Image (tube, one colour):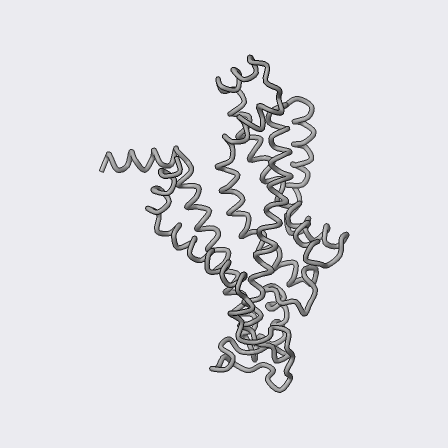
Length: 286
């Protein structure tokens, strides 16, 4: 199974491009202290609003801080939020989805109605409400984004469990007297992991966007900690004379989101047996 997945994934050049982008972002985040040419927090008003040059490849901001260094360090924040927030959302959503889909009845109705209420709100608005209640900090950003993403996992997992729970091997496990908890852990959950992995990868890009949006609005990570959204916000006042402040940070967000989306699409294509079969049928016809 693993060999088949690897074979299908490496056939997809777009997915490989996405993987390379993701690895590059992870590399920047992990080795930010070594890659950043300057201290991202150092203020030097004599160098404020310098255009891109040999000494400052991406220019400086209104406080004379090196934009390239701040973007490199900002990748660390974006990755933290993306990974931790998706971890929180997948943990909550998968648990609720498994319980809702397997037991159905009143439990299913209650959980799904709560999920429907959460999905009825615009996700960024729900995140803003949570941040307003918790306050601005990196931890609260990860919690807020994680909670807003949890309903997506819950609905996806519930749908997958509904189709799995009636299969013959599940019925056989029940006939053997296996407990519901054991059936869920050993038989149901392993068979719904593929869509969870794909959704988690795709939601990292949304988490990065959500963190950037919250930081842009002043409800994310507190300054002067460098974040991509915060850098764009800092550059709003200088768009006419120093557009590079916001431009390069926005470009970093675009590349990160694109990379995770391409990687997630590649995982979906490689893990979905129906799509593999469809491609096989096309090759036979050709």
